[in-house]
Image (cartoon, rainbow, N blue to C red; front, side, top):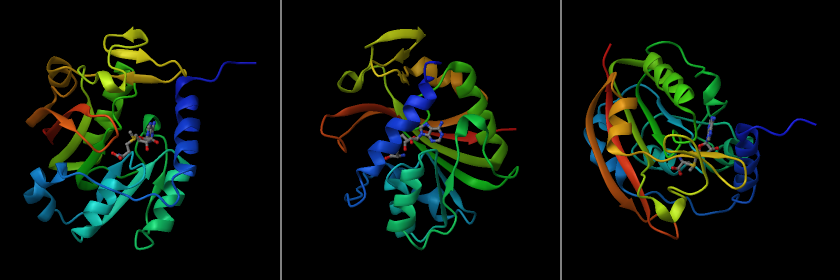
Length: 216
Ligand SMILES: C[S@@+](CC[C@H](N)C(=O)[O-])C[C@H]1O[C@@H](n2cnc3c(N)ncnc32)[C@H](O)[C@@H]1O
């Protein structure tokens, strides 16, 4: 029998994680406050790419925004539909197969801790897809693991590519330094990029919080 691939292992893990989180509190931290102006003036649906439990979806709904939560874990999308019945367009798809939206669809894509699981080629393909669905001058708000995120596996496991590690359970996790961010987002206007601590989890997480703008 063929060994399951990292993506299949990851999908199964996320599906079982969100199956357990049916009645959990959905809590967000304040990272999107930094982008209040861009969010306030956005009139198109905002894509929450890799929405998980829906922390950012909840934040945006409370700001009165139209949100499309997206994830490849069916259980995450089921939870979102139960918890936020006002959301009519949650979408279940694997972002490594492209994004099922038209060109120039939206002004804002949010990818919170969902872009750091992929090989270099796949990461570039996803970024190209995000660019395609963004309107001219549209924004990508994202957070990704930092190489300093020791509490959450930085530098642990087998390094498959520079800063991409195979975890013990067969998944993949990337950790970024400043140079990685500048390289992956070189075809973007990287407006803001800060390394900071996040305390939404039991153990402090070190991550990059960034705002990138589409340039054609
Ligand atoms: C660390 S969680 C972050 C969830 C949420 N954005 C947050 O910040 O709480 C990563 C999310 O990315 C999703 N994800 C991972 N790989 C994906 C893929 N290939 N396509 C779509 N979603 C994916 C997972 O299912 C999970 O919900």
